[in-house]
Length: 124
Image 1 (cartoon, rainbow, N blue to C red):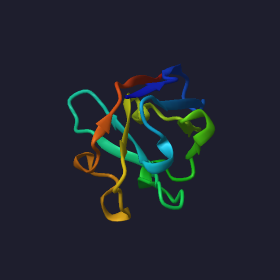
Image 2 (tube, rainbow, N blue to C red):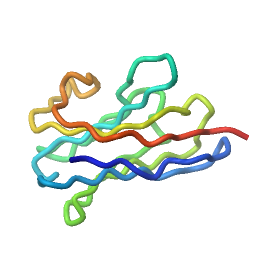
Image 3 (tube, rainbow, N blue to C red):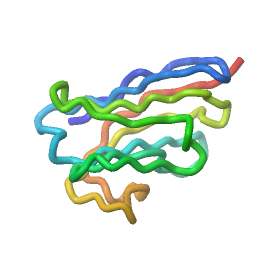
Image 4 (tube, one colour):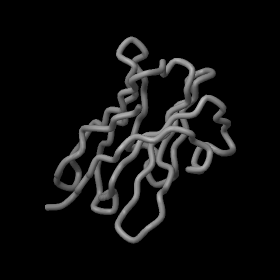
């Protein structure tokens, strides 16, 4: 199981840190992706940290603002979101897969396990 948390209401320019905690398996062997889905829109890949060498990948809209990291001792992956914009408003999901590759990390079909989402609202 995966559990995402840390969402909330924040003003534009603010920061949030999302957490994705795994239970029942070790994240050490899984690539973890973060997706967001705004109302009426498709789920979009935001970032991923690989399981092989901890490579990190980001969609262009969040480069320079978001970072992703893992703490294997806590079986947790974090998404640090800075300089938040209203267009970042969405439900954020984490997902896991142990066969992720760079070319497919942003595709939701590449992931076998999904957590429930956490709402992020950026508004003044």
